[in-house]
Image (cartoon, rainbow over all chains, first blue to last red; front, top):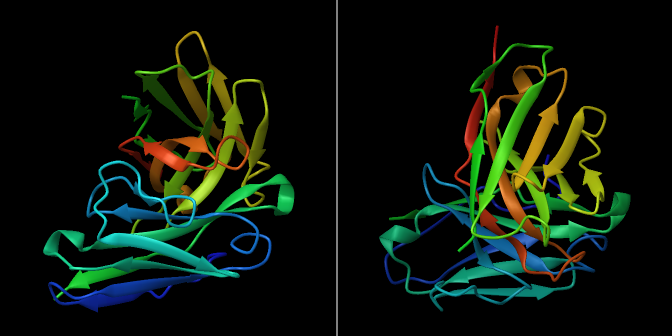
Length: 111
Length: 121
């Protein structure tokens, strides 16, 4: 059982806009930044969004993040076949002297 | 360009100790926090713990009694030891550069490719 809650799956057709939600609590999302990671099949996770809505160099602006209260969302616009991957949200949790917590992951299928 | 490379035995017997090493190249280990994360087959990510070169550590409460993370600055390596392993510890183990709120909030921004560890007799 993951600390952050994500839907297990999402899907869309090429060109569509898809959003993935992430729900937490006051000790994690409610008081810290949210991060999103993309994991392509058979590869290591890659940082996609940091500090709620910032993109590392090289990440297309089709990917965007937002946060409100104890929830966050990842939006992918202009969906492409290469976006098919698992997406994980993460946040620092202030309980227990500070730990990273993750969502269970959302498998995105491009139809 | 910082790169991380995990290494260690791919097979560990139940009740024994899992030992992995993460070699950091392209940058000094004495600047950032370093974390280990694992992913059981077909499942999500689980944070194991972090180490800062000053000696500061913290571990996932669910693993705390069995985990030790350390750093060898002379070799630019981060090590993970997990004792009394069971089949539930079978996973891909990743090391990552950790830029948490304890540093500058840029997240787990660089990851190794991961190494698969199977616990079986």
